[in-house]
Image 1 (spheres, protein in one colour):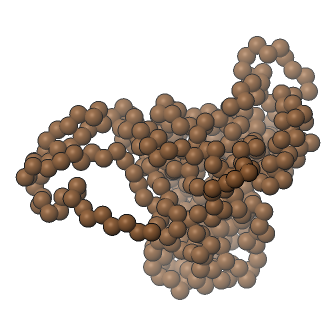
Image 2 (cartoon, helix red, strand yellow; image 1 turned 90 degrees about the vertical axis):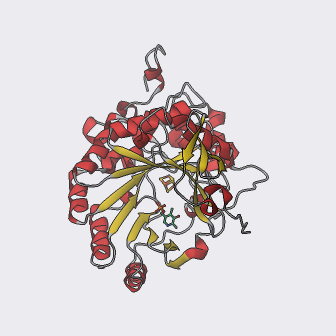
Image 3 (tube, protein in one colour; image 1 turned 30 degrees about the vertical axis):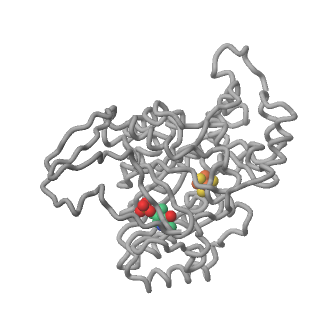
Length: 393
Ligand SMILES: *Cc1c(COP(=O)(O)O)cnc(C)c1O
Ligand code: SF4
């Protein structure tokens, strides 16, 4: 690889030519997917990585595998060892601490599995794991445990059981296809899965959870969009975590999706050293609205083994939300969600705006911390601040 003198940040980034790719190849998702960087020898192509660093990455990758598309790798700025994009995809020795307090499955997904790869935790909606493969393996992934398990299998028997379960459960109206990344499947496979689920009368909407718009935007092709159009309403839920992930390629992918009737929502994971600053989340959420993506959730990073170094204290998320409220469009403000370990499910957190009550007069705190009184037409015994608290173990 030849390098220009290091005069600007661009010089510390890989380009298509560094991977020997023509423009046409670079823009094909099949090329991106089959040329993923996943072995230590692949890392030797990166001129700014030292031998000892490659060895460290290799040691972690033996426990938690890694894979990154050339596209996502080209967004990393290698002159910054703490680059927020690098931190999300390059293995870090912190993933394998000697004593780890995390759990492999804190949300007890295994115990909510009702059919192979089908998680039914909330009454009207289910998650179906389609594959264990992803375009990139995010180091903070809460399903890290699955990477080394055998894939759920695309086999007919498994899907027959899933479809049978969905047919028998008329209370389910929302099916969330997840994984792994469902958009690593071929068009034909996706068409078949969507078609089978669509035939079930009581399923109203389909959701696809995919990081492909961020990690491999080339996957959003006209033929994929046609499939989505055929089987709508489909909602796509993606995961942009940092403003620099909003590239022209990612914008094009999201705009193609919206154009074919697929609303795109975003779930950001709050990650230490990646996006745990109000300014970073504000820039991210405003950028998302510009490409017509709605910031849906900001997730507290779950206590999953191998992700401890990403976790932030709960007050961080609340502080970030407070920093957004009143300083930007309400549309740009996601909800801050915490998934309770065990059977608790998701809880949304925000700064407490209720201060006190005097008769029918309620005192509420606004985004700037000022307290105002409000005449409440409600009843005192239904006071939001006087709720009885019971703790569940
Ligand atoms: C998060 C989750 C859902 C979807 O929840 P929404 O709040 O509707 O987005 C569904 N099932 C399971 C098991 C989940 O963890
Ligand atoms: S794309 Fe999603 S499922 Fe895949 S590694 Fe990243 S967070 Fe996990």
